[in-house]
Image (cartoon, rainbow, N blue to C red; front, side):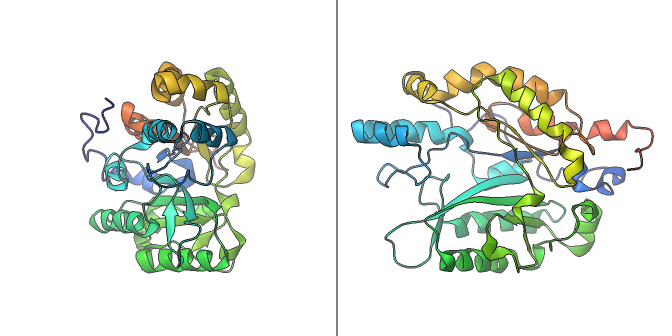
Length: 324
């Protein structure tokens, strides 16, 4: 039986941003290392709901072949990030990759996370994040709304106004990425940067455009290819002058999914390769040409967040930051 609650996750990193030395809180946030959460294998479903809208054809095919079994298996796979928002925030996660959907055929404009067991209302998740932020005034989160399914214009209006209602004056206004430091965020009492990858948010000052947070995706099952790809995309970072997401993530193929049915995707794909990926992360350095936000799978299986947060110490050992 899979343990969904790891031993030893506590709120040890609940205030890590607020505890950074002043030299770091004065640096642009795009230069700091920030742990993020991503559900790449989250074929999130509840056992009764239809398969979530972003499913690949082969998963649908599995579902038709042995509907109930497939759904049970998918629920098992989708335990990649089986911590609540609050637990992830307590563990130090500050970036969330969010995919949302309406429920087709349902009256009203309610929006759900695709990677919460399909059926977690977005509003509930946002309220949970907001109450954490109210208790931890110096912590800042990045909410990256990058995939929308079954959403019409009115759903976008609903979601954007919900974000404004829930977070209110905590929402940071879109401005030059360079000017965003923790000191600035604290002074303005901002705690939330929302990236909204959809034209319907263009005229809204507190919705940041998706191009300010590129997150190149390697789409491979090979750890070596993944690392090569991540290094190549980091080299091009300085040109963009934006935030940057390093997705240290392996993507399942049809073949690995089939094997995953037997072994559990977790053991088959990730636990085998995690040490390689973790040691690559440990060897990174934040800064202008270095890592910024890093996401990985199964964050609760490693001290992933600790490792990423500790990378910021490397910025302190520099004598003087090179002027850019």
